[in-house]
Structure formats: structure tokens, C-alpha cells
Length: 600
Image 1 (cartoon, helix red, strand yellow):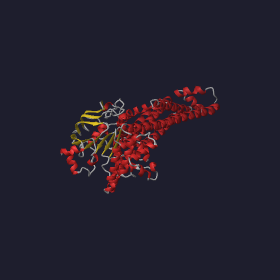
Image 2 (cartoon, helix red, strand yellow; image 1 turned 180 degrees about the vertical axis):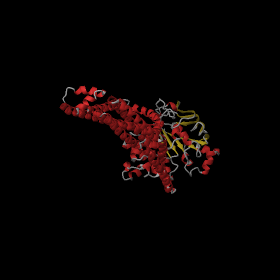
Image 3 (cartoon, rainbow, N blue to C red; image 1 turned 135 degrees about the vertical axis):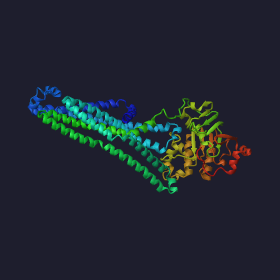
Image 4 (cartoon, rainbow, N blue to C red; image 1 turned 90 degrees about the vertical axis):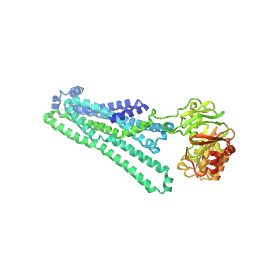
């Protein structure tokens, strides 16, 4: 059954707080026992008002157990003491119920927090091989929406366990009062439950459709935000609005259908319960009017039981409607079916000789042609190495392998004489700073964006880095200087300003290895010259790796590597490569500067 599968997937999440379920279950049992005892005391109380009924219900098991408790009390005393005891049990029951609900709220808030954090942690740690196959909008929907719905399913599961424990206590009390009536009631409730299952059997299928529709809406929202400039530049507002409306309408339709199914449970139980209570009352009174005290108590317990049975079915239907959300989140958190970059254990201190690639081949997928093939190369320490080539040659992919965003398919990358995969990832990357064409500026202050390179950087270090990157002057001209908030993805900054802040972020990191991935490609000449001067000043003992689209920017590089279709075709200094009259010379002649290349 689908709901059983959902419960099995949810149960491991309680591993965050393994003591919580037994505690909640125990509080539920104690709460229902308190209420049950209070209800059953109504029988001797009513008997105190009618001595005849006291004599005619002695064969009732529950009455035989209750009557001796008050045998030493007079009728007038019973009328006072029994309601007082009932009141005490009502207080105990509600105190326990409040404690249980408070514990449930505590548990919900913490598991929801842990669930979101785990999903985000998965996003941070899963390999790019996996992320490359996923739609960003769907991942955003999983984090922002489906985690909430999964936590809602957890709450429903807890309430289901509480209702189950309460129902058990009430059913036992009903059996003690009249096992015959209890069997009749059980049969009718079973028929009602089966009817409800028949009516709501489409919930699971609709749940899958609802999650899919919600994911598509998430994609539309994400792409609408990130592609806003493109949408407006091509005057596609009407087109995008239509696509958004259609996606939103599909979500509306699916969740409305789920709501219709979920809402049918209450009316079904209300109708059957009303006829059940009235039928039992009429038949029992016709049979024996003197059994009124135990009959009224039976009906009152049944009245209290019915919402719990109803809650059980409601919870079952709700779990069905949320099953796809649970599957979405749990499958995303599953670690056995996803690739990860496993960190080595050896700490990295500094670069001694350089980075060496030996026969490195890389494929994004095992069935695809290689993006890089048989690359053997040495990147010496303290020198500038530039990579050039046409779009799709594999330049950016090579950088991603050095940063170990991906694992090589074949061959090995050595840092000095140590395989890269043996190094601790955090310590290796802490010695690298990257400035790329597609700079990400966080929606915070300029100070925070620069300090992201080194979180413990002092104010003086931040300002010094900004000055080195030629960013200090324009920052000071802003209304709040370094405290200026730059907006979403740095929308208030020009392209050149973003690049200078990114360069300052790299400088404050004081890296051993500085990577410039087409960092000056989209800049005007003045901004390019400023950044180029800054990079030149950063040289010395620092290893610089440059992906260049404008070949004029790498004239002073110590080594230029020319890539074509994933292979090294030329290597040497600027003048040497020009004299070879090969691919580099051809690229230089045609002026490979005009258009930004796509990441390769």
C-alpha cells in the first residue's frame, strides 16, 4: 500500500530525535486513559441518581469493577465526589494533551529545520555530475516547498500514532461495557473506512501529478526571476505570463482535486456516525430502558472514539496526497544513487613545484564522447599559464577538474607529487581563488561580498584588497560606501564594478593559485586594462591560470596552452606560437575577441 511505503520512508527522519515517538505515544496513551477513566465514572454517577439501574447492570464487567470503588460512599457523597474526580481527570487529560501537542510542535519545528538543512547540504555536496542533469527550478521547489510538505507528512504520521493510541483505549472501554455493541460498531466503522478508501483511491496518483505541476511552476518562477532581462529584451512578457498562468492553473487544478478528495472523509463519517448513534440508542432503549447509564456512557465513548477513527482515515488520505512530496525529498536525500566528490585526508599546505595532469580524459557521462582527451600538462608554480581555444574546446572543464568540481574519467591530476584526490578538499580549495566571466555577487553589502573570500578578513584588509582591485574609489562614491547593498546578483553594479569586487574578493583570500576564467571577456577596454594591471601586480610567487578569449591579454604569459576539441594542439610562449603559424596564429589573426564563449 502506498501509505505504508510513505510511512517507511518517513520513519528514518525520526532518527534525528529517536526518543520522540515513544514519548508522544506514551503521552497519548496516558491522555486517553485519563479521559477514558473520567468518562466511565459517569456510569456510577448516573447510577447514584437511579438505584434501579444500579441493580440491573451488575452483569456488566466494567460496572462490576467500578461499583466497589464507591461502595463505602453514600448516594449524596457520590453525587459530590464522583463529579470532582471526573473534573480532576479532565484536568489531567488536558494537561497531558497540551504537553503532547507542545512536544509535537517542538518536534515539527526541529525536524523541518533539519530537513531543510539536509537538503541544502545535499545541494552543496553532491557532485556537479548530478546537478547537471537536474532542472534548477525543480531543485529549488524541492528545497522551498517539498520539504514543508514532507514535514507536514511527518506531523500527520505523529498525529496518526496519537489517534491510534487513543482509539485503542476507547475500544477496550467499549468492549468492557458491551462487547456485542462494540462488534456491531466495529463492523459499521469498517464498512465506512472501506467506503472512504474506495472514494479516495485516486489520491496517490493525483499527488504525483500535483508535485509534478508544482515543480513545473517552480521552474517557471525560477526562470522568470533569473531570465528577467532576456524576457524584457525580447519583449516576451506576454509569452512568459501565459506560460506562468498555465503552470499556475495546473497547480490550482491538481490541488483542488486533492482537496475535494480529502474533504469527503468528514461528511462520510458524520453521516454514518449520526445514523449509528441514533440506531444504537433506539434499539437499546427498546430492548432495556434500565441500561440507560451504561448505554449513555457507551455512546459518549463512541462519540469520542469516532473523531479518532476519522482522524486515522484523514491521516491515511493526507499521507497519500503527500506521498509524492515525501518521495521527492527522500529520493533527493538518498546518497547511494548519486555521485559525490569524496575528500581526501591529506591536508594541503602550499604548492611546491606545480600542478601536473597525466593522460587526463573526462566525460560528463560514460556514454558521451570525451570533453577532454589524453591531456598531459605541467602548470609550474609561480608562473602564468594561459589556456586558449575556440568555444567548446574544454578550457573551463579543465579548470573545473583542477578545482575538483568533477572527477577525471581517466588519468590523474597531481599536486606536486600527490594525487589531487588524496588531498583534503577544503584545504586544497582554500588556496585557490577564482574570478570568472559569470561573477556571482551576493545580495548583501559590498563589504560582505569582498570578505566572502576570507571570512575573518579585517576592515583594513578588505579596503586594501579593494584598492588593489581598483574598486575602492567607486565604492567610496556610493551612498553607504562599503555598507552599500548591491541588490540581487549585484544588479546595482556595472559589469566592470562586479569584476573588480570579484577580484578584490580573490585578492583578500591571498591565494597560492589565482584562476581567471575569461574574467575580462565582457569588459570594456578601460576596465580590462585595470584588471590586467592588477593581475600583473599580483604575480611574484603566485601561480596564475588564465582562460583567455582576448589573446592580447596573455602576451606576457609564461606558458600558453592551445586546446582544440578537448586536446592540446599547441603549447609555448606568445611569440613562439605566432611563429608556428598554427591554430593560435589563426585565432590571433581573426581576432578571437568579439563574442563571449560559452563555458566549455
